[in-house]
Image (cartoon, rainbow, N blue to C red; front, side, top):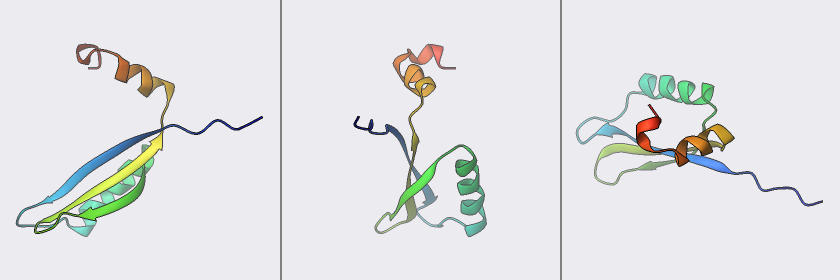
Length: 77
């Protein structure tokens, strides 16, 4: 019997500013928080010409998240 392919949800977030990058301690705290929420970083991309980075993470897509995505925004609060 073939295995079902896992489904993922993705998160992309930009950190830093035009003038200042991200401090290592702040980044570490944030990544630890994400890890506790089940996120796994899969890529980091430097924004060219800026002191910013994009962090891309994924975690397994749950039925709860899938249901929330199908609800109107007013009911997600």
